[in-house]
Image (cartoon, rainbow, N blue to C red; front, side, top):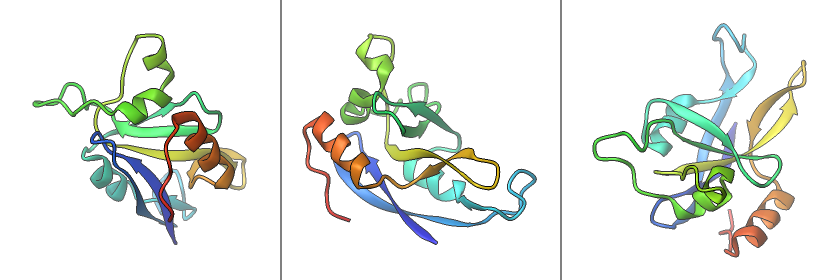
Length: 136
């Protein structure tokens, strides 16, 4: 199943990307539907991602774990950084592309998983950042 996710580029561009959720037969998922990490890696431009929480409850950023220490380092992402708590207290910023995801409880055991943003998430995001979110 194809799902739409929001991508913030360092250039300030906001766009929608398609990520595929399909059965995963790895040792953790055992056939449960999961997002394709290959697609996530391609969208973020890396081979190891990190999930960071934002100042908006229930919304996380998926980013390049080593974006700042690459040679050359990934570029500063102002929109994503404005969502990141560490940026507000002067500790850290976000470098490189960032995928925005809702962190929701799902599955048979109620575990947290990444999901597309819903209309309420998009409205909160638009109001907080003062930007228009493009239509899907």
